[in-house]
Length: 270
Image (tube, rainbow, N blue to C red):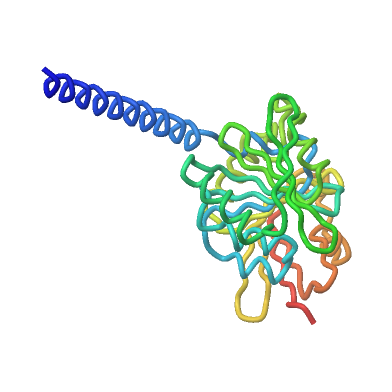
């Protein structure tokens, strides 16, 4: 009798463990499917006027030649995210990083942040609108803020960037959504086919540009839409420098073509 009871108890325990594992696995798979189905571009804040898009895990070092601001974060997490990765630049000096992460990647990134990026103190957690926001201490009295929302990871060194991201009205079209269907087609083609691409709204003109580094030169080419194109106004070297925020580089050449196509060559850091 006792042996029979023990056998039945063991079978029940194994059955419950199997059920628990199955339910957990199903929930993880369902969550990951929702993450992969999420359109990261829908999460770009409507007031963002500068977006850098990395369509795949390549070419970061090429981009860091132009801007290495967030290189220490990107280099740490780039193997554990679901692409694309977006850098959102606004008026703040600090950028906003956006990407998707699965359940497994979420755990890996948490470990990377706590062991590599910010190993000095335990993170501080704050709750806002039922979302957990984590603050990590960095050297030189800086801190990093991270938020996970619906499988979308947002990271910034400026809390206001995260706050703006939370409260951004997604019913308002962002920089990648234009009224003209032809413009939208070119924009989508650019961010899907280019390893690195820029989308910049400057002086009532939208620029959709592909970026590459060839030998000693930064090469940027694409198209611009809006007032500058409609008026057929050539773009000055000074405007290119302002457009791309070139502090330590200078534009070597600018070529304009028909239908508002643009090619820019920039010298590397002097």
